[in-house]
Length: 102
Image 1 (cartoon, rainbow, N blue to C red):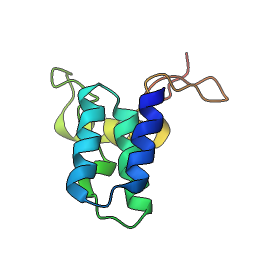
Image 2: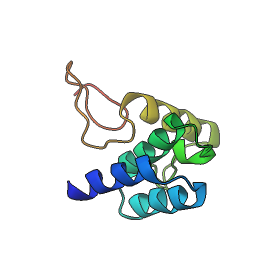
Image 3: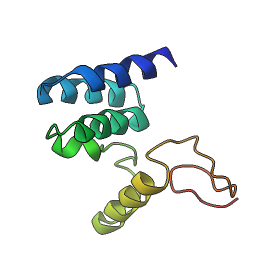
């Protein structure tokens, strides 16, 4: 929880795209793709060109039996619906990365 606050504060203060990329990479290394996306979105909202930081990879395992275009679609849905928050639960009860109904 404290790390989330620290990362968000740093994303709001750092101005170097390299430092922001390192911050997002550190979040991803911890398996927190949601926080990595937040770093990219905060930097992007500040007008800093962060490119790929707003679209982190690594959430879907390489071993997943999904075609290339299917994987791209899964990433697009996960980014839009849950922002890569594995524990996301919508007000309608949809759960997980892809916000599927139980």
